[in-house]
Image (cartoon, rainbow, N blue to C red):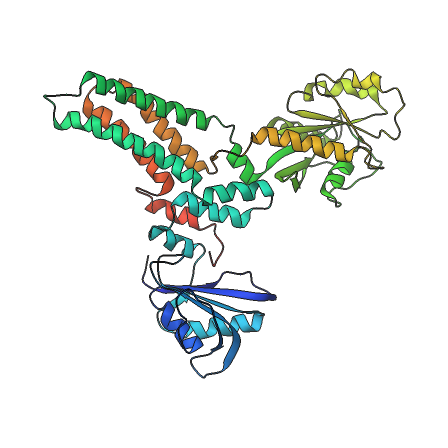
Length: 445
């Protein structure tokens, strides 16, 4: 971290009612004084005029705030300037700041990075900030808020603290080899390490719920041609994202749309109709549809209620990860047992995309299925691949501990586990990770 004072707008560019510019660093107070003519009382808003220090030209009238170190967002001197959100005002303010010595534009994530380096938050909390900014659904927002509040960090640090105590006891045997560890103490250490390993193993066996919540659950829409798959996708998306036509085989490739279903992020994939075809392009579309079905978290199998004879070709798709939708109920005969009785354990949701009948029931069913796959949100979740990798390293080291033999080897296994957990929160050896963690932030954060 250099000693330059950084500045950037924390609000998005463009016309708006208010724009917020933030400065952080040793020259923040001087820069604010040069623009406003005086420095506000710390942590108290000051309504003032902002002028260009070079010529005294008025830029705007707004609010100034000053937060001296270390009681600030970044742990450094921080100044905030609230002005009207016009492009001309923003450009004039940036130009005036650029002319002052010791100041430079902030890089993406640099405010959060400085907060981390100054001990204001750990890496998991910083990642929570990035996730909150990127959150598009209620579930993503709740998960990001929990991580930003330090729930995940406290869990990892709790494991790390327990490992450090066990490590101290094992290393005592190295320092005092003649005495050795008492048998009851050695057994207690082994029991504690086994418990921690079990807790981490259970935590890892989460079916990647946290990563799926960040990225979105994948739902593949499958079925024969002309069953109404594309029409259903358009209805769920509430806009035309897929071409619909009476001609069979309209959809040739996979068409994806991101949705918010029941507060959860979902990627809905419309696929080609499943049938045998001599058309090379349609055949490739069918192959991609089957591949998408194999990798999807949930399958939405759409059947035509007027064609019960097509059900046999779909049976392989219907399992515990499938929701069966019987479309065109407005055209189906009253006695629909011919096809519903043979659809396996998954009862069909009866709808008509044309009339809207059953769509509310379908959305409620999908919400239930999605919530079940995320398995609740009460506990911290693994949200990043690097967290999972570090936990796996720690778990593997703890698995090797009972077979280590010599105290020196056993202590080294514990050091590896402690270092792995420390890298998640940023306690140890994370310099090579910082660019990776913070480069996905927006400027001003």
